[in-house]
Structure formats: C-alpha cells, structure tokens
Image (cartoon, rainbow, N blue to C red; front, side, top):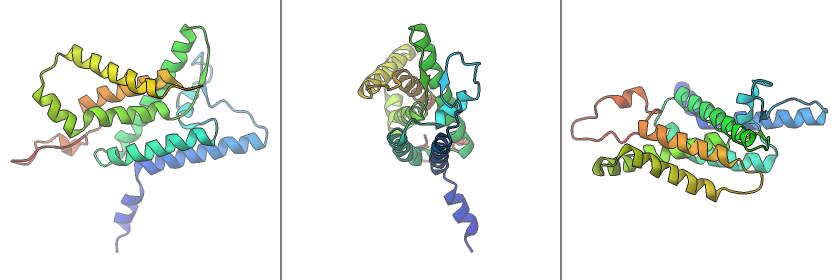
Amino acid sequence: MDRAGSTAQASSPTTVLIGVLVVVFLFQELLGVFGVSFAFALAWPLSENPWTLVTSVFVHRRIMHLVPNALFLFVIGIILERRTEPWRFYAFFVVVGVIAGVMEVMVAQVLGGPVAVLGASGAVFGLLGYILSGNPITDAVADRISVDPRVAILVMIGVALAITWLTRGRQVALVAHFTGLVLGLLAGRAHVLRAEQSTRSPPRGGRRGQF
C-alpha cells in the first residue's frame, strides 16, 4: 500500500497555494453575484482593514490577472518547494507578499496618489528573486569572486530594477514587484528557505547543491 507516499506527494505547497488563489477568486465572484461588498484589497491607512494585509496577497481583479500569477507561481514554486519545507515556503510567500503590498501603498501615499493593491505577484517575484540568487550556480560564482557587500547589494538592486522595468504596464504594481524581487534576492543569498537537514555538512567529496 502506498497511501502515505501519495498523500505527501499531493500536498505540494505550490499547488495548495494555487488552489487557495482559485478558491478566493471564486469566492470574490460569488460575492459579486449576490451584490455583497467586502474589503480584500490593501489600501491606506493600513489600520482601517488590517486583514487586507493578508487577503490582498490572494485576491485578483479578474481571471486574466489570476492566470499569469498562478502560472508563474507553478513554474517557480515547483522548482523551489523541493529544496525547502512547506511551512518555510508558505511563510516566505505570505511575508514577502505582505511587505511588497505595504511598500506599494506606502510609496503611493507619499507620492500623493492613494492606491489599492491586490494580487500575488509581489510574493511570486520574491520566489523568483530567491531562485536567481540562492541557486548552486550563483553560489559557485560568488565563491570564486570576492565582492564588497555594498557592491553586491547594488548589483541586486540593479537586477531588481531591470526585471521590474520589464514588467511595467498599466495598473501594474511596480513597487511591489521591485520589493518582492529585492527581498527574494537577499533571502536567496542568506538561504533562508534551506531545510534544516541541508544545513548540515555535505557528504565527503560532495557539494551541498541546495537552495
């Protein structure tokens, strides 16, 4: 019998998160059918609807807002989830998503243009940044090149700005994308998602090769 193995395989953090995104979207649509209004999006002041700090990460305006985020989450998440523990994966996704959303509305408030932000893209960009800076290839290059930490941070910011610029468009939360990328890049270099067992010494003659 192989039920235990099948259960473990089915509980992919990536597919669970995508399932949550879909369920939340359907719930939004259902509320709309019945004419019920509920605050999901994050807006200033943050203390007015504090639950939106989290709900804003999982809600989307329309189906074509949800689908790209879900697809990118699937591609990136499937790669990363195998190198970490589910609770770390979930926590990273939510925390980065929340911080990215907060930065978006704070910057908009400072610039005099209040906005409401929603969507998982900030969290997804955090996962992308983590993969870019926390993979074995980047580790190998970093081991061979001695770079001042300040220079390394400037390089990360430059990479985040370049990628963010490529995602520009109407009603795109660029500050959230940039914030997610920077947080992901920094977290990747610190390997914050590395599972406990992978922090032990690698086998003799082998490299860790972990995110």
